[in-house]
Amino acid sequence: MFRCLKVSRSAYYAWAARRGKASDKEASVRTAVKEKFYIHKRRYGAKRISDELKDEGQKIGRYLTTRVMREERLVAKQPKRRTPRTTDSRHNKQPSPNLLKEAANTAFGAGEVIVGDITYLPLVNGRFCYLAMFQDKVTKRVVGWTISTRMTAEIVVKAIEMGLRRGFVKRGAIIHTDRGSQYASTQYRALLRRCGVRQSMSAKGNCYDNAQAESFFSRFKTEVDEKIFASVEEARAAAFDYIDCYYNRVRRHSAIGGKIPEFERRLRETKPGCGNMEKPQSGLSHIPTTPTTRPKLRKGEMESFLSSFI
Image (cartoon, rainbow, N blue to C red; front, side, top):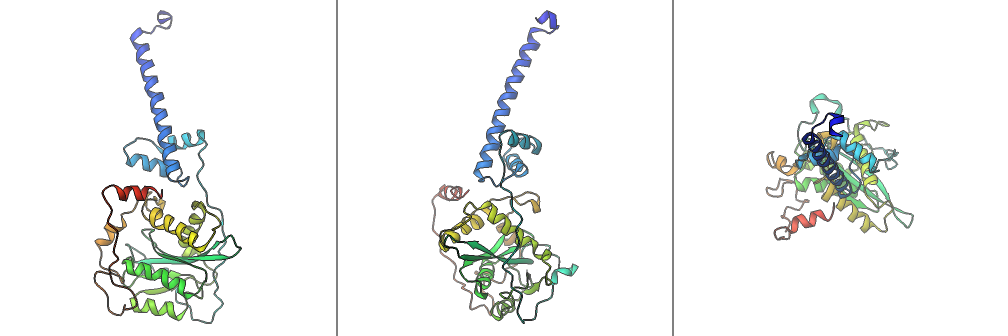
């Protein structure tokens, strides 16, 4: 057969060896892709999985990942088109101007522009609870959030206070929302004035300036496994698992090049925010300034703790 094909014996065995190595590499690629797909609970598509594997030193491109996912029938979760239903702008309060229209106010760093919104979460008893959140327009970090059974001014005040206490909002920052009655309340506006930040609102019927916040809610409702919650406590636990343990720390964001942002390192290099607990600011007596006591974990326990959420 070698004489008929005009192939030497050594060339045939070299080809067979290469073929075996190629099949082994294909098997390892499939295993790696499936492992990442299920670690992230079907939230990652081909590009994010490829970026994840490249950071680990594996030379696996996006198109190879796409082919493997198609052959293995791995389909990532996709958000559905949703219509916001929580904005109530039927009030007689004077709306704030839209500061995002000014080119000079374009965000250049963390904590300079924060967007916020509210969404509803259904409960098994037929009622709803509400999730309010504020997100950094540049880094995509959710700087503050809260869940409540009532959609009053208190829900947005608690959410923005979380971001202020953590130091994720700079003085002079723009806090942009829609024209909801919660954001036009006296309590909310007084807090913003005390903290030295500027309020901005979208024009009536124009949600494009606040599309980022609505995009986050679309992702949240798609990627969180529970669609209807048994109680408010269960909804709050699910929000904590997704926002604080996954979205802010693990998830790659396509808007910043598919990377995992190092929020804490960047913010340590900037000036203290309004809610810096190490150096309390004047006029913020309503915000706790006592450092929170954190439990001490042994070596390896932190990695084990975080891995339980992803």
